[in-house]
Length: 255
Ligand SMILES: NC(=O)c1ccc[n+]([C@@H]2O[C@H](COP(=O)([O-])OP(=O)(O)OC[C@H]3O[C@@H](n4cnc5c(N)ncnc54)[C@H](OP(=O)(O)O)[C@@H]3O)[C@@H](O)[C@H]2O)c1
View 1: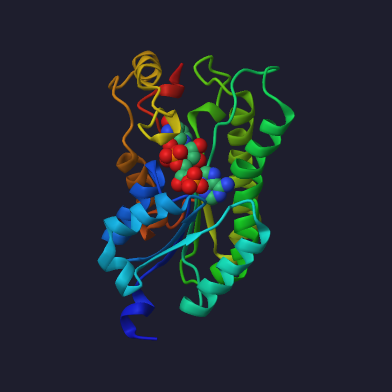
View 2: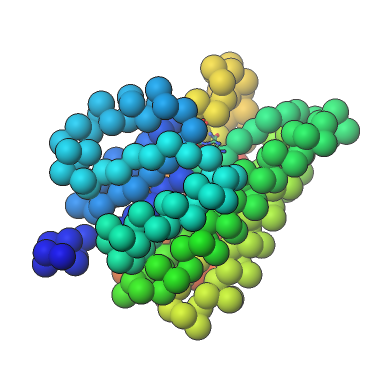
């Protein structure tokens, strides 16, 4: 292993092919890090490869097709990173879904699928990477939560989504407690309304909710704003920060 590859951080980001995940890939690559990311859709992966052909050619960006709920894939991913890099410095649990709307209107299948991706998978990824994180000098886990975790806002339309993210915030704290003695920091970032593919083109609704709840600016949060907070929490500037979730929500959760 070269001296350069010893000093570059090894970063794994779930769901790096759109929205916040793609901004995270860009931000960590700009820091000179070596980034692994994955998602389910082959076409989205090809598009991402097309954005950073040099990083892909140099092995700074490794993109894999896989589902965050697939335990066999997660095991293969950790074996791949172990054999390539021998450690993991930063894990970002970013992949997330909103599948339904309402409360009693949401079906059990939607509930289970939402919890699997948004809550069980961040735990599973942390579990599968715990040993590799333990080999890092400054290991960090970051969970991408949501303003919807903090209060039953009427503007958060899916109850299963809000519940999954509230669970994720508690998972952040429990993991910070469990992994702190190993030197692994665990934190979250909770965005407000972010302009991303998650809105499925519902631009008017997105802008309406932003105008109502983003008291600071009435502007949507950009994926790059979330990436900035993640970069800070992943850095040595936050070396004593663990078990916390930082809101990047232009005041969404204030009242
Ligand atoms: N947009 C917002 O307003 C907002 C607000 C607060 C929090 N967040 C959170 O921010 C995170 C990123 O959301 P986003 O807005 O960037 O959404 P997005 O544009 O829809 O991106 C979601 C990413 O997750 C991947 N993904 C979804 N299910 C997956 C699975 N089962 N296995 C692997 N990858 C999967 C998607 O790729 P494939 O579909 O190809 O698998 C995609 O790359 C999520 O956790 C979300 O809850 C978003």
